[in-house]
Length: 329
Ligand SMILES: NC(=O)c1ccc[n+]([C@@H]2O[C@H](COP(=O)([O-])OP(=O)(O)OC[C@H]3O[C@@H](n4cnc5c(N)ncnc54)[C@H](O)[C@@H]3O)[C@@H](O)[C@H]2O)c1
Image (spheres, rainbow, N blue to C red):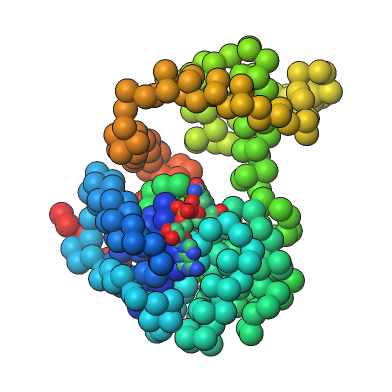
């Protein structure tokens, strides 16, 4: 059992920060939050509502939730925190100024983690007093449910910081993945952007609507990906002859002109209008709150099914069920 931290701070509490606060809160950990927006309190409360419903559905509601404090300054929020999760807007200058505020008040041995989706940690830690304790912890929405968090160090990040971050995220019920080579956008978003780019071309070229593209994913390979990913699935596709056979047979097709490679369609007003109209037709009958609940219920039930099979994200859930925080029976 990895030890839970006494206190965690979340600096920047929009979509992602609110969800980080909720995850730790559901693990019974005290969380202090700082965000200059007058909307932050409401956003955090809304995300926490969703997290409570989801954790109850998983049978993991803690007997005692942690405390959740909206601090009046970054300094107040980070004092005494073992880990500080920065989730401020995706802008190097803003993040750097937030680190200056954090470092003025936090403990010298606190881990400072950034939720950035793609900025390299070396760029973020450039002006810090103690850059060795800065690490990227890139989560996936909804952060209170999905186990994956990419952990990336910069050139000045200490090995011990990476280790601490991995241990803390494990304690939060997550599956940290150490991205060993520092690249823009890390691993998962590089993959997602390839699919996203092709999807935009398919709409742009009038081949498929947003709904048809989503159907092509969710009724087929999306289900495979959710439990095995890409390479293990393709290994099976190679049959008894294995992966080598598969790659020899299908690998060369990647050079066929199916893929637009790095070429991105121009986001003209017309394409943006088309995407919006199609997305409204596809999903406009549900509010965003309804969609969040539908998504969460589906994700929870998929993870519960995987837990029964002791597989993939279900293994993480099984481990979480066996860890120290007493849950409501
Ligand atoms: N949205 C996603 O799906 C997603 C996924 C993974 C990672 N991220 C990353 O998480 C970070 C936050 O993204 P988001 O989608 O939550 O954005 P957001 O706009 O919803 O939230 C950002 C919050 O930061 C606050 N803020 C602004 N200046 C601040 C300051 N000086 N100090 C403290 N807080 C400040 C804002 O008031 C806002 O509440 C970004 O780095 C983003 O790349 C986002």
